[in-house]
Length: 314
Image 1: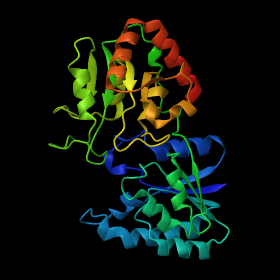
Image 2 (image 1 turned 90 degrees about the vertical axis):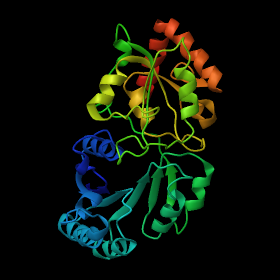
Image 3 (image 1 turned 180 degrees about the vertical axis):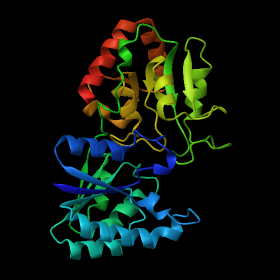
């Protein structure tokens, strides 16, 4: 098929976010033999003298329509393409009536107006795919649009490390967060609730942590993320927002996919995707810290579980 993928391909970040979800989608579709053309809505909208995306919305939407006319896609995929107007989608449906339009979303359902945004797209979208399995996604399945859970994507060309093969580790456990991938730097005074647990772990003398993005430590990106992650045996899949069934940020792909023994809070329900010999589930803060200490002392067992998780995910 000819597939037009409309998403934020983050050109302004100069490769800092090369692991982003849209690249994972493209890689999989290309491996399946499809012809994929990228349309980076936000980057194109910024193509004006003021580098203002809001000033370039109309021009970007016009260029999207021209791209559809030239490329004649069989399928259009929208990924967080909030700057694409519904009016534009309506015109595209008339220009290319046999073309299906689908949407993917990786946002937390209760943050960033996720459900509202999906509902507003429903008259033009046949299917939405989202990395949250909570039953409240059904609220957005209106106007004949179907909505389906998909797991976070693992990609062998992006998640390329096998950390479990390391002979030694400088740290026990790794975690990195940010207050917005676009911002890229620490936002002073900003907290989201995860800091309490991170401080507990950092103060435990039996655990040697390698944490970024909190306590005045700047976030890390791109190849630096891999360099630092590669120094630890374990990682914590700790997400912001209320725990929801099968929700996780792309962190889960980065950590398990690169071979860290990964800890997941059991309230997220990932026991329905992973067995206990593939990841480590924990009940609360104390349970997590006890298990980190246990597995730092039992490295062979930790590596065995990390390998199983890596194999199951890829």
